[in-house]
Length: 275
Ligand code: A2P
Image (tube, rainbow, N blue to C red; front, top):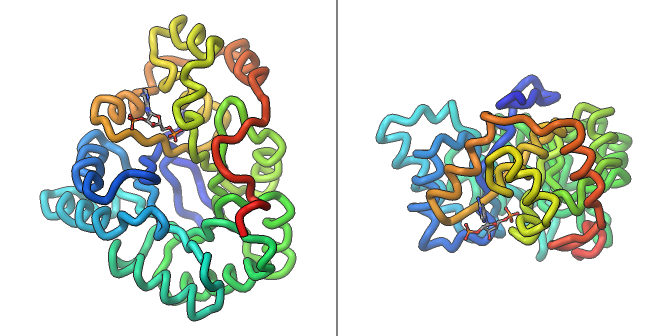
C-alpha cells in the first residue's frame, strides 16, 4: 500500500497519521514526541481537542532536535460552535496558526453543522486563507456526499480530504466511492472503532492468521481500501505497533470477511446531528 496519497491540489497526504482527539493536554507533549520518534509523519489536531499549543510545542522541539518540518503534515480543524461568521473563522484559524506555526498543512471544517446553513460561507473563508498562503491544503470533516456536492456546486472548489468516522462496522463504502469519483481522500477517524472493533472475533481470527494484532489488521484494511486513517494511542508500544503494517497483506477473502461486518454502528456523532 502507498505510504502517501495524492491530493487534488498536487500535494500528498500520509496514509497513516496520529490522531490527537482526547489526548489530554498534559500528556500531549510526551505522546506527540513518542509519535514523531516512532516515525509518524502526520499529526491530526483540532481547535476542539484543547491541546494545540502542546502539539505545536512538541513539533517545535522535535524540529529543534533535527526533525525536518517539511517531512511532517500538521492538521487542524475549525470548530465553529459559537459562530460561523467570517470573523469567527479567521479568529479561530489565527489561534490554531499561532499554536502550530504557519502555514498549516491541512485545515478542515470540523463539522458541517447543516442546520446553521453556513458551511459554504465557511468554506469560502478557507479558500481565501489558502489564497493568502496560510493553509497548504483545505478539506472537510464529517461531511456527507450531499454537503460536499453543495461546496462543489456553489464554489467550484473540491475539498482534498473528508475525514469521517470509519471502521469495519462503518466502512462507508458509498461515501468512499463518491470520494474516489471526485479525487477526494477518505481519512478515517475512530479507525479502530474506539477500540471496540478490536474485540470482534472475525478481526481476531484474521489477525491471528497473519500473526499480527487486531489493531494492525484493521489499519491494514483501511490502507488496502485506498484510504487514510488516524489511529491514536497514548501508549508508545501501541503507537509503534499501529505504524508497523507493511509486513503482511490481507487477502481478498479477508477483505470480504471484514466487509461483511458492516452494522452501520457509530461510536461517534452523525454529521447531521451536531448543530
Ligand atoms: P490507548 O490510548 O489506551 O492505547 P480509535 O483510534 O478508533 O478512536 O481507537 C483508539 C482507542 O484504541 C484508544 O482507546 C486506544 O487506547 C486503543 N488502541 C489504539 N491502538 C491500540 C492497539 N494497538 N491495541 C489496543 N488498543 C489500542
